[in-house]
Length: 382
Length: 95
Image (cartoon, rainbow over all chains, first blue to last red; front, side):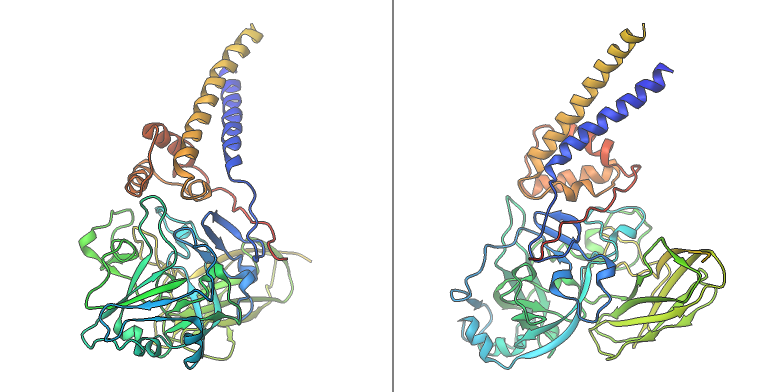
């Protein structure tokens, strides 16, 4: 009896001490954002609840945020300069108005954090424990990166560009610098965006953000201030060992082998269920199951839904347009015959025939989760 | 007897409580210069994984006043045998 009492007492007091410490995590409000799943407020790592993701264009106030290091002080748009140096015939420093004078293009594209879904991996891996909502779809607008680079005359020998933003590391954290191969640099959909859904939110990397449609979010460098064509890949942390995956699958829980990692480029095919919410209760009545699906540089061809744990599948209705790079919304009517607990699954197929797997490959950093989405719903008698 | 026992238990618990608090305060002092503690408290990792994280952060400039105490605190409160915390939701930041 005394031991039990002591145990309870100790647990209660220690929990109180931990709660007191968590006072350091005061409630946070992120200016311009609806209530978001808060993984980190300094710097901001914000996940969208999936209930916000039922429109083709995700509004800026609902769009997820991933910052590796604290974002830079507000950028003066008059003083802003984009430096292009390195393997070029004419190094330049471009103003925003010079970027605005180039032909402007709009590219609708889905942006997904490389670690979206990390929280679903077993065993657990370090990193932000994202669920379903580190993804959104926006209309990005600005000049083509290839047109911008023409102003500096890129050498034929350059095989990569190095891209740096205005953010800098704290203490000894590395600067966020990325490389991109020239084939993707020259793609007509690769932009230096000057706006997102017609807005220029600093929290999302404006006044100038790199748009790399179909590639993981890490490639979409924010607050771009320098582009350097080169004949080699950047050696910085965020290219190696950061943001790499094993060349071949490892047994879950196995440490990374640095020599056997490769850079992540495109994202896999994936679908997500947004309604009903996981563990919701619904009446025995017609219910709409809905969500979204996206597929790297491809388009979504098909989404299938199961309401019986995967024994039977039906095709969902897909929204138009069918585009490369951008997600499609999907929905399907469901009328459960009787009360009970139902496991609902969604499975996407893309225009290249890739199908969302039951079990995605575990990897030591928890990237690229794309397992068939799964929710549970309790149907109650009316 | 019961009062004496409770006092004894209370003082033992107080000591444990203080130790938790002090270890947590070390965590605060050593970690929050670069990021909020939310990113730490939302994870559930094994001892080996927390150990690697402390090494990684040391490489990025973290200075530990008592590395062992921080590791024990992380394993005890945010170990992979602990249930996941409830997701925290930010306030409404729209004007």
